[in-house]
Length: 168
Image (tube, rainbow, N blue to C red):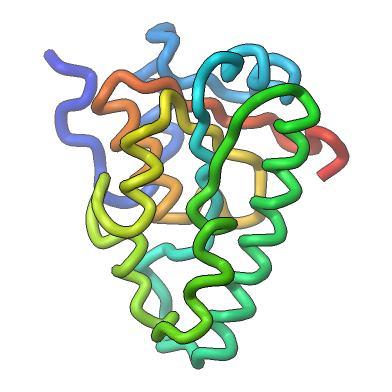
């Protein structure tokens, strides 16, 4: 049976970790040094919670903008952490932060309409691995979940960085 068969559409990290245990594709609690070594010679994709496609009530453009700025700041910090270790890590949130000011940020489907599509797909398709830092909300983020599942379905490594790494 294919390991990728019927990955749930909503985040279920316990099931995903159990399914890929021992495969080498999904690694939990990876420290930054190890992640940077695994990323050497590769292009890594930094998946951070931002656009989750699920929210209780429509957010104002201001609230959506604040969420994007917060995610962009966290992504920028983690990108610098990896850069100091010599790893090349890119993030769609850092790249989009300056370009979405005029857009309707309430339409979260623009970034994650379905796995491997949307504005982040251009970067994700060109990367060799996905890195998930322990930023608040990552476990619940449909966007992070879809990035990880999309990568695993294509035999790309997914690294879940251990909490409290680098004091962040």
